[in-house]
Structure formats: structure tokens, C-alpha cells
Image (tube, rainbow, N blue to C red):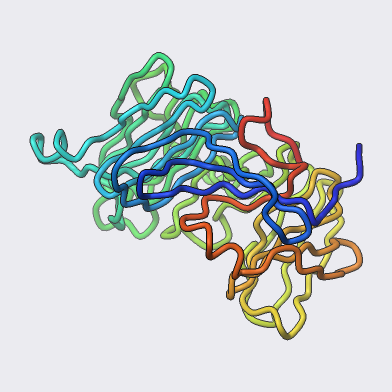
Length: 313
């Protein structure tokens, strides 16, 4: 495996006025090249986006529209439109999460504490299915992308009831405590493609991980002067302790050689942190990032996941 250059980065950006999605190559803190991936016309009020696990698609949430873009074919899938939503009296914005195989998006209406429904969007061929109704407190994918789990608050019960729903079956199956604990604690249920709702207990939220599932970050967003911990599949744990000048850092990426963590500070600066030696190197200043409008993702060039033929690192 080639050695990673921690000073080589790639940035994915959305320009909201006569722009679109662009990516930049950064070397030693300076932008060296720009490439347009897809273009838009007019003004777009952008909220957020996420890259599919295989790097070939983007899920994007705009002012009143939910969109998925196939970046290979450049095809746009309008999952929900504001005009259609108003006509049918439904929420036009959906918080969605990619399936591990990048074929589906799962989620429900944005901005609500308990989801009234779980909806599955399949991109190719395109389809929309209602999978569950109720006060849904949390949900996620099974690693094979063939089933989902979800937890529902029912009546006066203190604890939610958990279910498994196979995509090819019509009825959900209740999950016992042992199966719930496997979902909460098993590494294979913790990639970023799986959603663990923030209203469920803290210990079962998802954590960043490498695509080969050999390294994960135990607490990716850590408080001022508090460390983050990186764990290998073999059980080794490494401590990332920020210097006093770095405030409220967040881990954003792990290099493909598993030697570096990319950490963003509260002020917008990005640092490459050597995982075993805790060496901190400033690789991109917040002033440079602020010039790029809506940043979707900053990552090491060698682990860049967008249109690379598959995830690495």
C-alpha cells in the first residue's frame, strides 16, 4: 500500500448560484485544480448532502426538494418535489441514509423528533415504498442491504419495540434483546451508511469507520481539550489529544494506510493527526475553506470516495 501524503486533500463543494457540484485538489494547503461534476442553473438553497458508499451517487437536500444524483450517468432523481408535496399535503423534505450497497435510500420527513413513517427510495429501477408507520425513534440498515431494523414507541411503554423488516417481505419481525444488542454493538452494524437516531441512547449512535471496516473512531466529535479514540479491529486503541490551540475538533476521515486522521477544528482548520504518535499537522486553513461556499466533504486524496470505482480507506 503506498504511503499517504497527509497534505494532499480533495474537497467536494456545492455552489448555489448558477453552479453545481465541484471538487478541488489541495496540495500543501493550496487549491491546485477544480473539476465540475454536475452543473445547475439558477439559485439553489442547499442544506446538506451525503456520498453513497460506492462513491457513485449523491443524496442532496435543498430548500424544498430531495434529490439523488447518479454521478456516472449524471441522472437526477427527484425523490420529493415541493409542488407535489403541497398538492398531496406531505412533507417535501426527507432525511435519508444510503444502504451499504448504494442502491437504496431510507428515511422519513425531516425536522421531526419521531418519524411518522419510514420510506424506501430505490434508484435503479426507481421506486418508492412505505415500509413502516408509527412513532419511529430510530432505524438503520443490516449490512447485506436486504433488511432494515427500526424501533417504535408504542403506547405508554417506556422502551421502544424493535423490529426487523426484510425488503422482500411484507411483515416486520420483533427483535429480542440479544438481537438489539448485536445491532448496537457489532462492528458490522456501525458504518456511516447506517443511521442510529440521536433520540436513541448515545452508545448506539454510528461512528466513522474505514471502508474495509478495520479501523473506527469511537467518539468522532470530542469536547475542548478532550481526546478522541481510534480503535482497530484487533482491539488496539489510540488516543488523539488535541493541542490547546485546537478547539472542539471533529474527526472527518481516516487515511487508507490507517496512519492519519483528518480532524476539523471549530474554527474550520483541518489537521492531519498521526494516529500512533499524536503528531498534529495543519493541512488546510479555515480561511481557504471559507472561500468555497457549501463544503460537502473534505478528505484525504488517497481515500477520496467520490467516483473512484469503490470506497477505499
